[in-house]
Image (cartoon, rainbow, N blue to C red):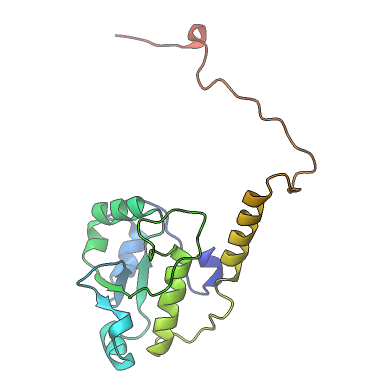
Length: 182
């Protein structure tokens, strides 16, 4: 959803990006950063626009680890190349709208909310010139639909009739198994 809202975004799927050719190609550029929370990061919320421009340079590449918090930590732990990046972060003062998913702490944001906040900070620092007024609209509509469905589970869905869900055997019958010991 976040990529659909961004003009120059790229999704690179994986967990360990240490030997990923595309990631390493981007990292060869001088101005690559990782958006990741931390105390020793360059905090965009507390810097003047001139400081942000001086630190990030022109056309910065910003890596965003998209996944659950445990998955993002694992990606960073395994990806030796991403560990070396300068990190940027921001002070979050908003509560996440992602009310259907439990966050580790109340001020944790979803990926799309983090990118929205980042973009607005980069706009203030004159590093970005996009319009973010409707950036969160698809996300907000998705949450609205999910909450509506939770509150009214019998509402019509995209399927014309209600299907019966039949449990399946997760394992083959013992006579169908083929185990070979040597």
